[in-house]
Image (cartoon, rainbow, N blue to C red; front, side):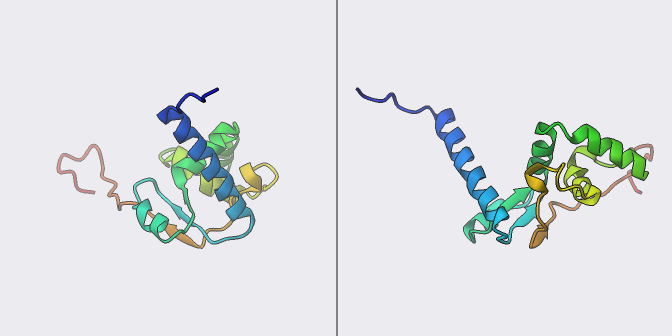
Length: 132
C-alpha cells in the first residue's frame, strides 16, 4: 500500500517537533546558545550552527504551560510598572523568580550570548512634536 504524500503543514510540524527535541537536548547538555528577540537576524546563528531561543517563543512556552498569570502576579508583587512589555518580559521574569521546578524545562539555562533586536525609542504619546 502506498503512503499518501505529506502535506506542507505535516512536514513543517514534524520538522518543528524534531527541532524542538534537538534544542531541548542541546540546552540540557549545556551547549551554548543565543537568546534573541524575534527581529534579530536568526540566519546568522543558524549559519554558524548556534542554537537560538527566541524571547517571544520562550514566552509562548511559558504561556502554554499556563504560567504567565503566575509570573504577571509576581511582577506586580515585585513592583514592576504596568507599562512593561509583559508578554515579552516573561522569560526574564521567570529567571528572576528563580523557581526552576515551576519553570518550563526546569528553567531555560543561562545563554552564552544575548542578541537584542532593533533599538526602539520610547516617545511620549501626548507630545505633539514626537520628541521624548
